[in-house]
Image (tube, rainbow, N blue to C red; front, top):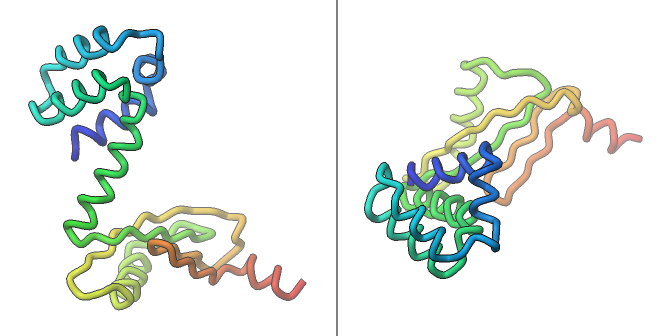
Length: 146
């Protein structure tokens, strides 16, 4: 999982690597040889990339990496949650929000929080857990009244 996410992040940061993955003008054989020469990868990851290169699917690497990561999180019982606040939350506030969110997920699941700051919501919080969205922001209250 770490290797795939590392490759995904590399494709996001490196224009050259992203171009290599996306470029249909580079032959399957060239891509396969290049991927096979990546010594720092585990044999399983290297074999996956060789197979993807041989089937002209290296351009799908970001999608494969993020999907695999989601599946692994589900297997470990992790639930991703995003907290959007107008100002940065303190560690104590994050802990309190995490405890409240933990009570909303099934037993055995762990909430993994990503805190995001967005001054445009003015105040309050917006919480996203999976496909559920709870908007407790001042901005939404103002829009309701207006």
